[in-house]
Amino acid sequence: MVDNIWTEFARSYDAICSQLNCYRRMAAKIHRDTEGRRYIIDAGCGTGLVSQPLVARGHTVVGFDNNPAMLGLARRRHEEASEEARRRWKVLEGDVRSFPAEVPGEADAVLLNNVLFYVPEPEEVLRQAHAHLKPGGVLIATGPRKRPDLRKVMVNSIEEWKAEGRWDEALQAATTYHVDVTRRLVTDPNEMVTFFETDALVDTLRRVGFSQALAADSDDYYGENYYVCMAR
Ligand SMILES: C[S@@+](CC[C@H](N)C(=O)[O-])C[C@H]1O[C@@H](n2cnc3c(N)ncnc32)[C@H](O)[C@@H]1O
Image (cartoon, rainbow, N blue to C red; front, side):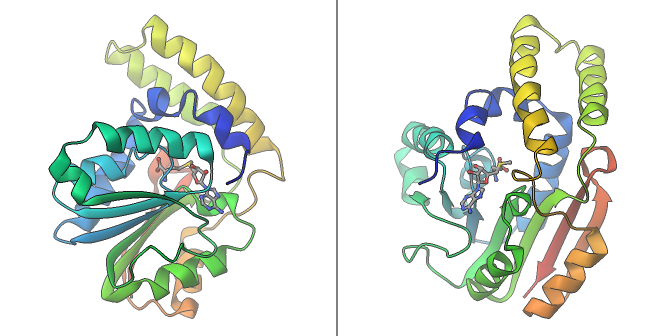
């Protein structure tokens, strides 16, 4: 396990990300592209914010992460789920550069939702994803195309919250803290290390062995992020 900036993010991650419309739109695309796909690996699952609704929809999900604070929140979510849901949901400690041995292969989908940007060796991670998918299974990867414009994302998000009547004191306090940590994340060259233009990621995935791009766009986070869904 590694104690890093994600320990600080764990304090505000769910309060902010669950409210961000840009995060919700990205999660909706993950739901669209995993529909009918039974077994999903959520690599770098964080607090389990993406895993949980997938489990609720009936998927079997194995999530893992290497930050103790983020993983602690995922484990709490798991404990609070119904017994039936817990039987289809595992939360493990593990590194995306070498998936833990307890993660079964032959997955129908692997998620790398906003994870690759933190890894200096993205191709190793993509090879792991490929090796854990069954033929026809999909990898869904999202993340920043370049060093992101945090101001643009937050100004748009706050405008939307105000228009929807959601910009209350609790959200304002969580935002102040979260933006402070995020500013450090996005500006420190040792924290945010890997960016992909959408087409470049598709090319990289082809080189790793993936075949067909089912979705590839640059719409998320007000145009800052790529969203790629590619079949093995
Ligand atoms: C932006 S969060 C995304 C969390 C989750 N995928 C989501 O969509 O809410 C990035 C996560 O990647 C995890 N992470 C970063 N590098 C990792 C690595 N080498 N192995 C496992 N997890 C990693 C962090 O601990 C953090 O929880």
